[in-house]
Image (tube, rainbow, N blue to C red):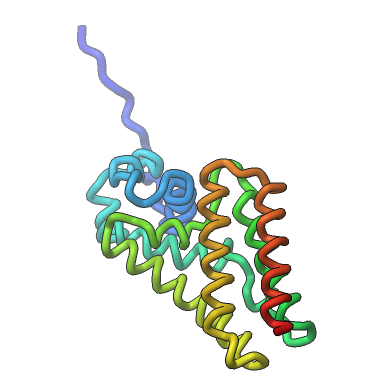
Length: 196
């Protein structure tokens, strides 16, 4: 007696690259670039490695697409927070508080995908994340420099460093309350530094 598997009729399910990027974003954000393998990605997407490589070229190619998606859909909205109609200190303090909220919003994917990516062991991934980080710093610098040109460098460094620390602490399990307390204390430092 022989058994035959029934053949599935119809067209195979189409691979949706955008849905794949969204799924990969969750993996990279949750586990970090270095901890996610191509086999982890293909298993999560339900595809085989040749389909993966045909769609994305490489793991770092996929990561670059993930970073673009994160920037467009999930990153902190700097353009909204850095407003010209309020004091620079107020905007920077609001940015730090939003970072605390943002980094703790989803317990499954804490911290900032970009900030954490800048710590990757993989050079291509680290460079891709660093490009987005530099762009964010450039926005902050330009915003501060428009009214406080002499303070733009140190304020940008301070805000960027604080946001990196908030991301790391969120990844290490700090609560929203702890992150907000740090962000608010840093915000007071911003106000004091700009007042001198």
